[in-house]
Image (tube, rainbow, N blue to C red; front, side, top):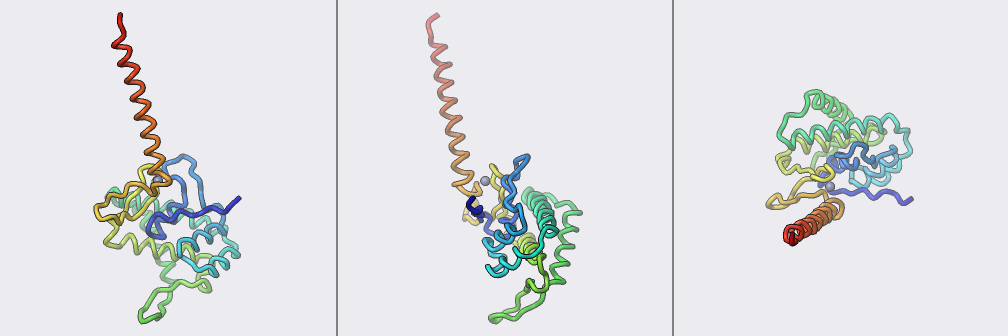
Length: 208
Ligand SMILES: [Zn+2]
């Protein structure tokens, strides 16, 4: 089987991470991160780790980290969902994220690179947790950013994305995946409805 091609439609790695469940509205959704090695492959695709780091991560024992990644994913989804509907996220979710952030803070060091200071979480220090801790940093940066009002979700599959269109008119995660499918469904019902009306109309017009 060909490896899954990760659909990076979120415009942010933390959103793309939450979107590794397809879809959030389904009772038993498909999980695109079935193994830690797949999580490492996602991390490379999403630009969270380099190819060399992804290879090193995939070789580490990661079952405990995979469980923690999945917990983080569910928690982030709840937080993004709450923020999107302008509700306060659950305090226990925020506390858990703050604990993760503290862990990321302990693992991070400051590095002077190309004229500026950056926070770095490297593989030697953080090991298998590198991916999760980098995700936590991205998520917090996003959740505390001004452009969070651009956070949107696909009405069909529940995937999250930043709507960067000028008039905030983006509706779907992607036209290919949901937009065209929903449009096709609508067309089906529209034409089906038209057929039924025509038949009913014919019935009324029939001579008694
Ligand atoms: Zn969608």
